[in-house]
Every structure is written in C-alpha cells, then in structure tokens.
Amino acid sequence: MKKVIFLSLISVLLFSFTKPETIKWYSLTEGLEIARRENKPMLLFVYVSWCDKCQRMDKKVFTNKEVIPLITENFIAVKMNPEVDSAYFRNDNILKRKVFLNEVTPGRLAISVPTTVFYREKEDENVIMNGLQDPSELIENIQQFLKK
Image (tube, rainbow, N blue to C red; front, side, top):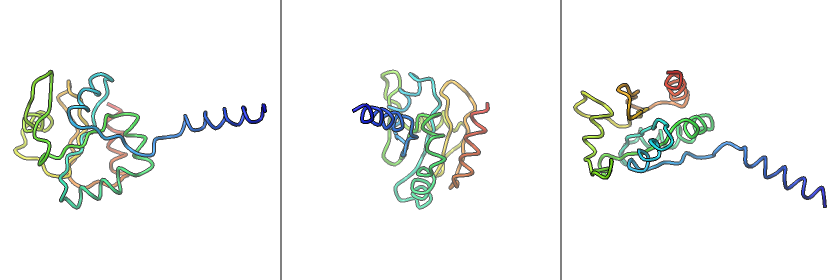
C-alpha cells in the first residue's frame, strides 16, 4: 500500500512539473486584460487565414518544443486576424483594430502578415518582426527582448 501511495505521489509531482505542450492563445481583448493583470508582455501574432507563411509559423514555429515554454512562461500569447477581429475592448470602450495596430506599430501605414510583436502596453518600443521566422530566429528574438 505504501508503494502505491508513493508511486502515485511521484507521478503527480512529475506531471505537475512538465512543460506545456501547446501555447494557449487568447483574443486581443482577453490578452490585454490578462497581460495587465499579470503584468506580462504580450506576444501578438498578426495573421490572415489565407497566408501560407502564417500557416507555416503556426504549424512549425509555434509547435516547436523549445519555443512553447519560452512563450508560455514569459508572454500572454494573442492571435489577431485583422480581417476578422475588427474591434477590441479597452477600459470598457470599443476601439477599432486600426487604433490598436497604430499603437503597436506606430508610423506604419500598413502591417504585413505574418507579423509577430512583443508588446508592452506602457512602453513605447515594441519589437516588431515582419515575415516568416524559423524557431531559432524567434527564440533569439525572445531572448533579446527578455534581457531588456
């Protein structure tokens, strides 16, 4: 009986310390709220459904076993499709996505897809990465951002 209890305890401990297997993605409204509450930066992935490079990042980069824990431990992950996600909430106000994208990428007339942004709401300098990235590029960019 003691062996069963001991083995059960060990298995519970092992499972509780395993790394996440997937990234939990939030909507923009949810992500902003959670990022504020937890005082964490957001990783914003701007994509569209018909974009081949966006799909490759989703399938090859955001499923990478080294990328997943880096994102889940350090960011609130948000996916935003500008063709679908037309508005979001901030302080009980509805704002258009163009207002938000202008804040995230100031001075840019348009945003290309895929674009990955490391975003801290109260800071002026967000890291904006346009185009397809491989896992090693994203890992390097995350590590540089976290050193700041």
